[in-house]
Image (spheres, rainbow, N blue to C red):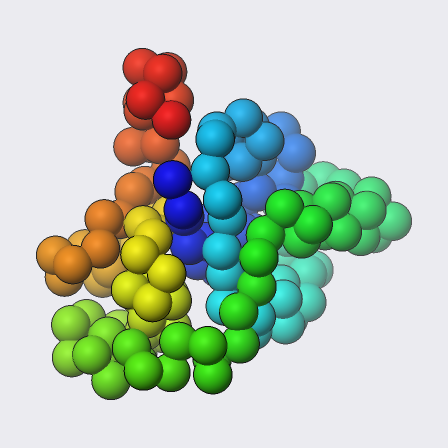
Length: 138
């Protein structure tokens, strides 16, 4: 299974004690993300630090560890799917995630309901993935 991570999924993974972190390290999946997600993580680093209760050093170590397990793509690698994605969902902030998923024939890991407005790509919430993992489906 190939899963495109959205911002909030990545942010949740950064907290080592979260269910998202557990899933990230346990499920058999290839993780993909738009390259700009790294700058989003930097932008919201303080909030992630507060929620994860990690020190800055621990957070940076965790970030490096997590990023090693994700394949990042520039927008030029999925540019041909951006227009179609913009037509399918109402939230412009989610267009890149859908475009990447379409270009790589992947599903999306997101708790964002806007991504479920379309039917071309499967969108799994953390709860969905946890159930699938517990049923040994992934």
